[in-house]
Length: 456
Image (tube, rainbow, N blue to C red; front, side):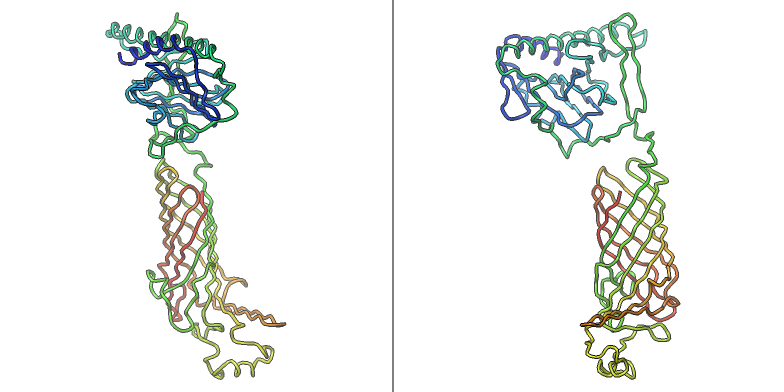
């Protein structure tokens, strides 16, 4: 009864309205009488889905522009300030808990794909501003015929009241020199209220169920209410395929959990931004908030030693070349290597390069744009001319590179564990090794990687 009484107030208020003010330079126009006010909120983006919740009363009109006219009682609050109108992506949500306002929703027909309403909500469908073609009257069983008649009469009364309010509004607008029409809205617009704390809705809702209610003999066309059931949602192949690029800092330690600690001697590394990974994954299990993915990846790691000249002895252990016999200092080294005469020890650098093919298995949790993933990453080592222990020397007029093969000492497989946190496609990750990088040579080191990622 509340909404019908208020609609009658609207009719009387609209009939007495003699002018309508257009807010200059903005997209929200307003007219006001003693007991009622009208706000116009424009929408600058396409709307593909409409949701009408709780006790909202909506008059849906197909138009050439997207905007909303709201009739409300100023003493009961402003529907825009109360966040009764929310846009999430391309979904328009009208959620008026008490149904204190009436919403004339103008949307482009060719954009709109689905309409959903709560059982308590009211929707009046119109082909355009001058013709009604559907209502939201509910039907019941035969034994409830009196209830059915009462409900239908109530809805028809609402339909007539909304129609009269619209006509009176048009009369009031025509009496003003500053006429508010759809054509005046398209150039300068602002977004409808967007509330990050409001209930989230998917931007690509599929039609899971269509309820058809047709009244033969009436002037009403078939109604279509689209209802969405997340449990039955199906995901396309493009939804399930993901591609990721990860790059970050790396180092190693003598245990899997202390990779950022420094080691002594020739095995000491510089923490460097020299690790990157490419991955392609497919979600074999996928729901709105959970996915289980399998994939394939490629990983490249460069470990930079703090000691300028590092080599591996016959047992595969790293050693400082300058401190081994017959060299006690860099001058002794130069006597046996005249090619590098006049160079300095700091002109040298040593690094270890490893490459892997991985088979990542990921469990992902998804909360809208916020995602957390846990990945087990088994991988096989690649030994090519681009991997191994590399030395580089660069001085004035002299450049030198060589590659020392230590593939027999590198563990041919590994198992890493990784955790990822990202928002949208950007995130951070941390990855630790559960197996030593080397085997059989006494160099027990466990790499760690921390960095950034771009991942779909």
